[in-house]
Image 1 (cartoon, one colour):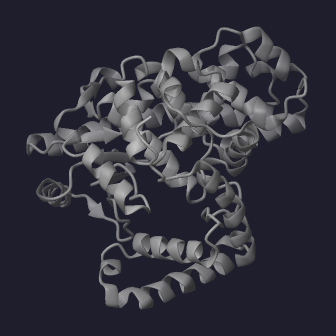
Image 2 (tube, one colour):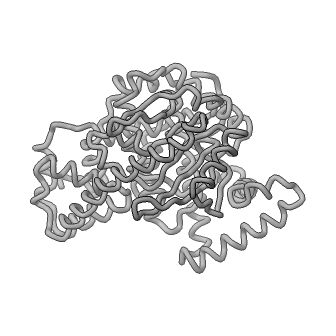
Image 3 (cartoon, helix red, strand yellow):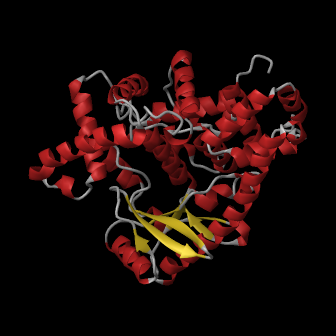
Length: 417
């Protein structure tokens, strides 16, 4: 593989797919000599990162599909066909859900989903799992919840603080809709979270529109859309991690909207939330590993006075590539805990996890000690019976990944740029 390991080869294929690189010949040369075992590894990793349809489309586009072993090609083809059907189904369901809110005059915006898929070179190549719709909290949010229940949606019991989850059966399939009052989970730093809430105040009332299959689908304005994607990546990076799928989303969005985005405003957004080093690092990885043209599509990078060392950037890339989609490739991944504060870091993380598990009850101060105990007991039981992993391995992984968080200096606001 010309000194390319499977991880870097997968990142290269994904990068060429999302930037639609015309250099098909060199890719064919890279995969021509793959053994059956290496093809199996490539398939397994693309499955772990939830980008099988994208990888298959790129390999087919470059004339490499016939080089695959029969079993590998059969799985890729099956996923490609299922992904195409799934995209059409999600377009239909998203349109139906939006009509409920729009008829009632409730401002809303689709987060990711078919709006992001529509920016891909081929929309069907992006994996879809649920529909996320953003409605400002308060009266509109409660009205939206009641409307969904009236229209036959079932609210799912396990909730987190920033969204409610509903299921709905349509066309012999079951869909999940997440109704968001915030674009992503609350940041652990209160002042930074308040800045984020100011940024997204009334965001749904002035939407940008995307046009999958000719529909008019409301979404966030470019700077807010970019901010929501970054917060989504950070949310998962601080827990079990995220994989190549979210990097592909970021590259696709910047190529489609980066030149139209108010980059100075976006810089103010990420600096006010204290996440500029994280955004810089993710975008630098997209440039180095996936071929994103920063000067053209991410000019905000030239405005930011921050960064991390090449060694730390490589560690962050390895964390992304080894964890798979949302860290699913490693059972010991659950969270990243900065180790500089010792026990305090773990107590802060315990409180944060308690808030996620008991979003309402955790606001009642006298209940917190009991809720902390419940969170710890549930954590230990799940490790033993569900995850089948030792708690000590989870804590070691959390501390190791926490070193990356410390390097990123999250939520330390040092000025606008």
